[in-house]
Length: 393
Image (cartoon, rainbow, N blue to C red; front, top):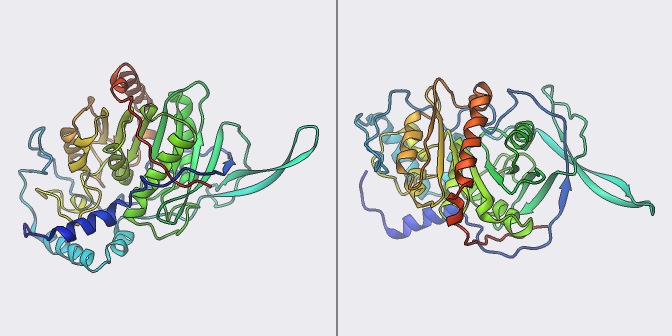
């Protein structure tokens, strides 16, 4: 499998994957103020529901080959049964079918768990009618609950450079200068995330900005997400957060979980941010089903283990020792490959979707410690602002 691949094919695959939204002009934006009732555990945290993150990975112990193991070297032997699958994926990429395969194996968007509706209200003594938008979140029975209005909770709809529209959610914590940009897992949406992120903002005393990938929630093209759109979406969200809402990039913490670590690390290598949190992350897409790969194939998706070292921001890795979907070897390898790293948190007995719930106190304690470290000088190195613009309506 170490055959030579023409540069044109490598570049074509790379261009198709990135879908960078780093160019474009910031424009007018439409703010949709929204809020909704709280939701409890089991309705989707940062990771979403318990559906498979990408595919079931082997649960055998990891054997990471030192701190410089970005190439994915392991002592275990590569099982030959996966070779045909890898070859097929490469051939399908050449045939232009990679997006179709990824929709079957990587992305699992749930039915939209929220709605955004327009309401008309009156403002001031002149009884001037104004439009405002509120978010209705579905309960366990699937019915839309009653919303409540909060001046610190907003929803936006943004057009991306690839012609899609994504839905984003901004939770403002008054007095906080730090904003977490959250990239969620592959089987959830903003409706399922809302309650957890409200608590996240309250406990950590930070603002939170989250977004639905193209194909998820109320973002366009539902049920048809792609890797290229996914990477373009985070650039659009970051551009809106920094260029329109005015949050400096060195006050942004990128938080990616499971699938969300792909767009998180792709953005982290391009922009100066305050810090990066990798929660139940993947080394790369193909390494989820074949973790013994020594070097990344040109047609692989989300090559996190190769690019994590390009980020200058401090990286905090969280991974459960009993993660049955993304083996802990992924987290260990990502930590080893990071250039600027903080002590990782290997959650004893933690799974793929339960860390933020079953170890709630430790979860927030560790994140507070992380914020304390990056606030005391790490971010001072990254004052240069990088503008990533997008068209916003």
